[in-house]
Structure formats: structure tokens, C-alpha cells
Length: 159
Length: 420
Image (tube, helix red, strand yellow):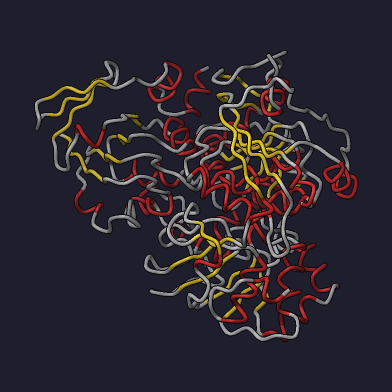
């Protein structure tokens, strides 16, 4: 089961997700080693494949560096749930085929370490620890289509 | 119902008579900016997907800037990938090292920005070009790849927010102070997903360089784009800088256009501002923070590395000596040459500054002035996030070139008006 890593903070920015000193490469494996390093130097050690990052408002603000999404994807994070997202990060995530879930009461309904299962199609998060189901607004169809195709370029090619 | 400039430009680009906020449009892109951090990945993605097509070799502008000249082997490899591709595809507007500059200073200066156009770039500060009544916004590498291949991109039409700049700028107060005040008022997500339209009499006091400082930082309030209507100042700049394609369309917001909110700023009452760590919204008047000891001054970047900024800093540094290490980074080769010709380099040199080649460099903690643990830097750049210019425990204080220069002389945050 996926574990929730909760960061009770707004404006977690791209310099924290992947510090610019690592932007001299676009190698995903290399970037993944430093995922969230500016915020939590131990994140990569703590994160198991499929785990979920949960945060406050404006997640991913700052730079347009898609490296932020690649680092998170490379660290095998399953999805990011935030109260809200910065625009470019949100767009980049969808373009990379990565799930981002906007959930205004994320920090009330999910605690650090909770076991989480997500049904993207139904727009449902099952919090196995609290035993409660949480509804979320599913992404618009065109965005889901891009994610299911494996990202924007695959989507364009398909069309 | 009337439309804003932003809505009119997106409608035109999508081939529609009208658009409303929230509507998804598929827009034709007029210019795409590519640099050394985000474009090499876009190029690799296209190759991996077997997409060979480049939509228009004349609408792509390429410059290495973040780590130029290459700071290490890895960045040299990024530059090589960019260089090989630009040559292979015959990209017309390619600025290799020697001609390369900080992208958002370079593109307007070299005449690539025209009113009414849709401009995107693989850099969040692409919103800078809105100073020219264009729609411009930052995108990631995948979007860059999509634009390079197809020349189109989908957008949600943003709601517009009106920022009214009343009064006029007092001596020692610059457009940087104004935008820091705006971000302080609305917060770093106060304009999230929105178009920030700047209007009002104080714009009359601002050159295009000064206006670009404000639209540059629209993203620091979460804005999708920043935009300023066309006027005589815009026209004068364009007459001087546009080269091969000098025609453009001017759009104006209708009097009955809809705004989601209106923010009023009385510029006449502003003081020089400093944004303390770790958010650009942590602005405070210099009177509340003067005296805080600094270790470094950085004068440059896409926010404040243009010739006007060099002149403002030089005026304060003239005849004086800096008390802390001070790094001056003219944003483009043309700014560099102009600063040299105007005698500004002599002033910087005599004051004890180091003058760098054009680069984004230390603004993002790359090189040419990275901070050690515990160090504080007063900087004319746009972000003061944790670790932005170096060690995670270093601190960045955002300010105007005047405040930065005065602080360099004193070695602590200083009101530039004492030097005027």
C-alpha cells in the first residue's frame, strides 16, 4: 500500500523539489537522487515506490523546470496530492503522464504515514488508516487522456 | 461583453472572434524561446519519439544562458546538444556563446518580441515579454517539444487581474520596488493562473527596461502572464530594436472588459523595498530592514541586468568602494559593450566589483557567485527561495539595483536615497 508523506506547508517550490545546482543534467536517475532535497534531505530514503506526497497550497511554484516532475517520477512517487498547485508544475505533470490531485482539505484528511489507495477514474482516495473515503475532482477528460497515453508527446503522436 | 488584451491575443491566435476566461484554446505560437536547461531535454524527447519536424526555423530563438559559458562538463554537454540541434535544424535565430545572453533580456533587445503575439519559452520568467503587449508565458520541456514540432499549444484562457499603479515614482524608488510591493500585497499565489494587467499613470515614469522588471516577476505572484498596453514608450523601443519583421498588431483592453479583481498601489508613497527570505512576497520597506549585514551583492539577471540597471548601480558606486564582494553581470553582450562604452565598467572596477560575462549564473545558484552556508546576499534577481543562490542555509534579499549598490558600499542593507 502507498504511504503518505505529508508536508504541512504551502508554496513548496521547484528549488526545494530539485535544487538548481542539479539542473546541469536531465538524467532522470540522477535527478531522482536529489528529489525534495531542498525540503527534506531524507525523502529519497523514506520513499518507497508508489508512495504519495501530500502538501498544502501552491505546490511546485517557481521555475518551469520539468526536472521537478522528473525527479519525483524518478523517485517512483505515485502521485502528488496538494491543496492546490502552481500552474506550470501542474501542466508539466500532466504532460509527463504523472498524476496530480487537487484536494482542498488534503491536510485534514491525510496524516503523515497514512496508507493510501487512489482510484483515479472514480476520483476516490481510500485512506486505509482512517478507514475513510475521500472524493476528489477528477482531472478533465483531455488531461486524463494525455496521462493515459503516457504524456503529451505520445498523445500527439497517437492523434 | 468586452475583452482584455490577453483574451484578444489568445482569440486571434486560436482563430476565434472572441474567447472567455476558462475556455480551452489551441493557439498558434509566434515565438518559442529555448535555453540550455530546458531545451536539450525537449530535443531528446523529440528524437526518442521519432518526431523530426520543426514547425518554423524562423520562430525558434535559441540561446544558452543559465550555465553559459559552460560551468562544468555536464553543462558543456547540454550546450553541445543545443548547439548540434540548432545547427542541424538550421535555426535562424541562434545565439551561441559570444552572442548569448540572459534570454529575457536578449530576445527583446534583438527584436524578437512584438505586440499582439503569443510567445512561449522553457523558462518561468518568459512572462517578461508581456511588457510589450504580447501574451507570453513559461512552459516546461514537454510543451517546448510539442511547440517545436507543431507550432501550437493548448491554453486555458486566464481571468485577468488589474494592477493599477497610481501616482508617480519618488526618487530612489524603481519598478522593482513597485513589483515587490504588488507581490507583498497579493502573495506568491495571489495571481495564480491569472493574467496580471498593469495599468496606471506610474507606468509613464517607466522605460521598457523598467516595465520588463515588473512583468518578469508576474510569475512570482503565480501569474500566467503579465501584460502592459502598448504606448509611445513601447513604440520607441520597438522602432529601435525590431529588425526583419517590423509589423505587429496592437490590442487594447475594452473599457467593459472583465477583471477578477483590482489591486491599487499608490506609487508616490512607496519606499525602496527589500524582499527577505524565503519568499518574494516577504517585502518590507528599507526603513524596516536597513542595517542588516550582508556578505555579497549581485547586480544582474533577467529582472535587473539591463543597461538602465547598470547605469543606476554605477551612479551610486561612482567614486566609492564596495565593502563586500559585489558581482556585476550585464545580461547580454550588447549591454556589456554599452556599459563598457559608457564608462560604467571603470566605475565598477574602481569600486572593487567583479564584472562577469552575461549569464544567469548565480541567480539560480549555478556559478559565478554562489553563496556559502550562512551567507547573506542582496540581489537584484527575482527569487529568494531556500538555497536559491547556493547553500540551503544561505539567504537572498531581493532589491532594486540602487538598493543593491548602496548596500554594497555599506556592507549592509542601505537606503539608496542617502546616495542621491
